[in-house]
Length: 142
Image (cartoon, rainbow, N blue to C red; front, side, top):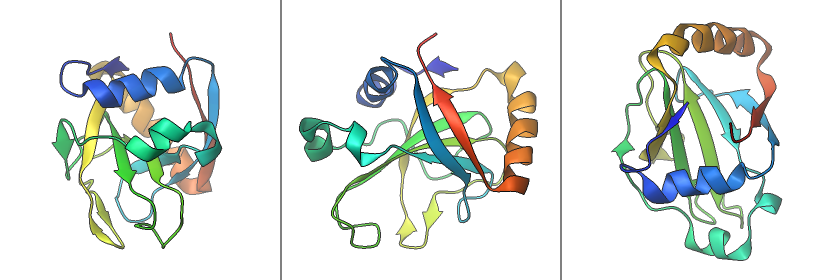
């Protein structure tokens, strides 16, 4: 995975800081967005400053491509009226993806990309996750 520092500096900084220690995030195969594994960052992992500031939209998309790693930020009370903001890491693995949620189109920031040579293996792994519905993704600095 390559971080896209120059195109999405705040979003890549968020990912980099999140991975200061290895993190295991419960993830699911997305229901609305197509070929995506969705890993919502647990609210308890966020400091107050990050929770309040959120993430700016950078290198935005509503139609992620295979290999895109997209951060989607939703402010408090937007998703289901919950008081916590949503910080979601989406791993897109196939064509036809879209950031269409039950609440409407939500642009996200392409913060990283899986190397083109690794996309087929990632797609195969994500296909297996699709059949089971859930997994745990580990994020760490390499």
